[in-house]
Image 1 (cartoon, rainbow over the protein chains, first blue to last red):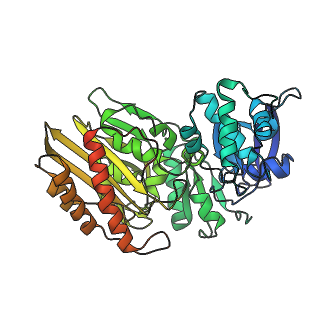
Image 2 (cartoon, chains in turn blue, red; image 1 turned 180 degrees about the vertical axis):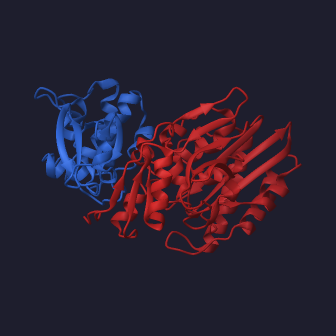
Image 3 (spheres, rainbow over the protein chains, first blue to last red; image 1 turned 120 degrees about the vertical axis):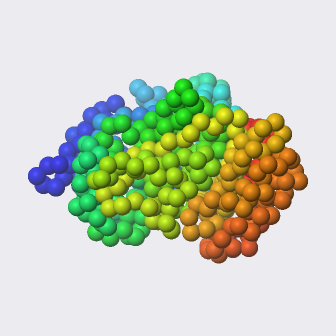
Length: 165
Length: 293
């Protein structure tokens, strides 16, 4: 702990290291949005129920509202801003666009990052498994069927519907 | 969104330091493991003057060890997602419970030590551990001791731990020829706590039930061992008749309350239904369907 009562941490976000000084009660979600300006991670319920704040930590989906920033120090964090590479949308992002799986967009980052973690571990996930693994992300617009469709279209890392929409 | 109020914070690097901090801060001390429950409580302002003791810098509290003789040891900081694929045939009951605890992102973070140590009557992992005759490994100022899971709980939120004591892991004895399962019902298939749950473990001798262990979730002040239900099953010929009989006794043995999740009456009905289903699945083999109850 630093003399100020703050904790010095290193957040590795989307491949870049950030040195921060944060109080112990600051969540990873707050550090991402307020210290780093990465507002693609959404602030929903704050209780781990809605999934809007899901990010990947060492490849696993976690609720950023339930992780203290001090606990994320040294871990590899991926937010929605880290999905696209070299100006190219990630196949999941393209599929969400193609299938119209985004309405208001509030759940989309949690949906896509949850789907990425699932497909990275299980490229052949069927609709049932996708439904189960994404059940921690709530969509108040009701885009679920299109989300499932979009994720199914990206299996094996290939956006099979690429460019159609 | 309500922010989490400032709190005292420590990261001990040894169990001894953790015990000293627990002794120093007494009732204000809270162990931070996965945080999926504690940080929600903190945000809801249900924990005042808290001093968080983050035990994740203490080495050796994570992971599953299987011994040659079939015993399994699970570190307190082992996350629930690891338990979902526990490679141990006798531990299906714990595997099943791990798969229906919360959501994916919660299971990636929540720990077995936190789920048990919180002493919630709705803990999904405590009833399975009770049916596995597991013991909690407890470290404290006076040294280490083992507490049978069936005697770990005094009441809601009250584990039987002394000042300065913390749970470091769990020991599960070998489970030869045992088959178990866990089923729960919730208001949704997603992240809600159980309205009721049933853990069963059958030790079989051919078609006969040599020994049975049953424990009930969210229908009493603590995870609830069900000795009368076990007595019905013990020595019986496995099958629908004795399973139905056991379910009636389990519904009677439950001590449910009415709350916003379910009425006491409904919880009894759930226990009856879940007991038959859990016993049937345990006996006939691990369910491959992904959804339960």
